[in-house]
Image 1: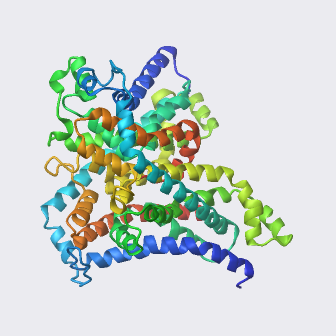
Image 2 (image 1 turned 90 degrees about the vertical axis):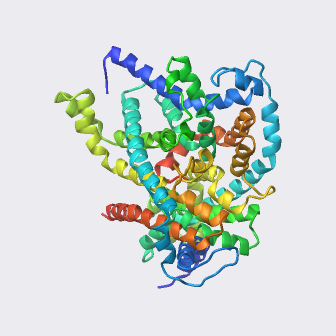
Image 3 (image 1 turned 180 degrees about the vertical axis):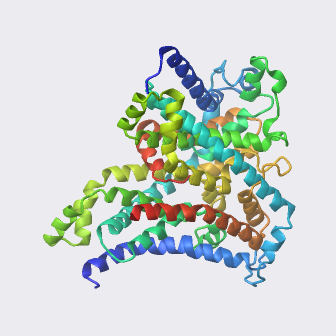
Length: 291
Length: 274
């Protein structure tokens, strides 16, 4: 039945449906169409050539390097942020005075723009005047001084370290909320049974953090896939493609070299990879809500 | 959990040391913003300046003035628009029963998770077609559209807590959809508007990707793009670059100091950054 009420509701709904429908869904479809074309250069071409772009991507060493870098990034950054965040959450759970202050300090980097944090790390990693080399010198570890992000062997790890620093506060926040939602009586009962310290956390608390761990995991994975701003500003993908990632390659191919079809193909691959992570997660959370 | 006293001391030492690590980049940012180029070379980044100067901050402000104003314009406009639309959507999704409302909610939610690279080429083409390339208006439209999924989620979760009986009572009194929204739901919405508003302001202000793809021109570029350019041109003038960073960070730092509690609620709602 279509009442006047529902008509009004539909009218209010319309702007959002149109905006999201167009800017999210139609644009994704349009991007796929571009990726199947031979569009190169500034004049649009919708001459459909099928999967040519995708085939050349998998023969392009830059693409394979970027993909590998993304995978390394994911395999270090995701567990690194989860563990550091869990560690911080447990520390703050130990009835700490000024807990709010510490929490706010650890979360602060996450509130800042990647352009800011990347500029700060660029400054810290500087060979001559950067604070890291300066500090190493001061504490007698001068032999460890390095060019950090300019050293091809460790540049990617320097990027990983910096983004773990930025995301650890976020995972801490998620885990802390998870720990706080475990009932006090359950912890008491375990304490009465003689569980304490590390054992209490490992056996009683951590096993109950599966749900927050999963949502943090999805957020971190999706971020690591599409990481762009931070690396663009910190290293620009260098030295020698050692920190080049898919999102950076997509941007350069499309907007610096005008290889529109090629860039769109990289974007489609990124989108599909994100779907692989997000769809099972959304399916699980929607099913849980329905129950 | 309670732990023995000696271990408690170790705990606080650890917490303070970690706080030092988390604040170190910001501390060196502030010290360097007040240094002369000479001090940048002859003092360590941790030390305060020998001869404090506000010149880097003034120069950086002159360079960043217009981009900061641009950022402020589209951030405020898109924050307000996306929150209003999100609020209406949240109301419709929770208080008006209709078939397929879950599907519609899923339709919005997926928008939170998509990597924006997947829409970037069509987005640039669309904004150019509309004549909004290199125009603050293009960024307002873009940030509003891509803000709707997350604001819808935030408002929906809040409105789910308003008892249906309140709405039902108003309905039997003859109030229509719009009246109920304006008279009952909206007055109860201060908290979600603060949470969603703070969250949207921060993420839109922090954006770089849309800015660099849609508005690189000198009159329309956002502060994030201006800062990245500043880095490109003045690699050796660290005091100027740090001062520019400080200006760009300032609004978010102020919001964080005053409203961190609300920003945290936004982060927690399955929010995705970047």
